[in-house]
Amino acid sequence: MDDNKKLVIVWSSGDREVALKMVFMYALNSKLNGWWDEITLIIWGPSSDLLSQDYELQEYLSRIKEAGIVVEACKACTDMSGVSDRLQQLGVDVKYIGEAFTAYIKEGRKIITF
Image (cartoon, rainbow, N blue to C red):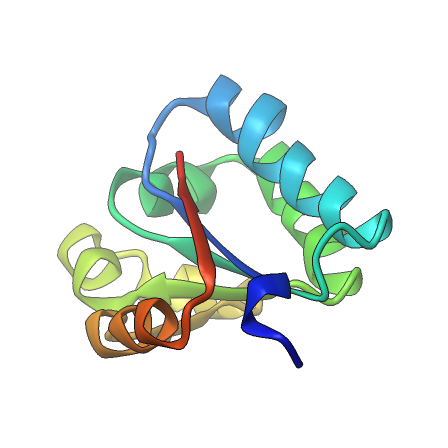
């Protein structure tokens, strides 16, 4: 698969409106419309707290995962906030993300941040 057709979305904002009207909307529409072959959503920083508490975002995340988007979260961040277990229950791959993120960059994947 061409790495130019692989997208990594880094979601770090704790702003709910950013999550609903930018991050999740773009991720899901991108997958459903075939704009990218492969999409990885990384939950990093304050976004993990927001997701752990917001039922509507959790429901939206289910649709994102069902569409085939890979969802990962930074374990260091989720551990600091005490939400690692909650995100794992939501089906998020919680892991130390620095090395994986570096690999995505070195592979030439497209990266956008919110």
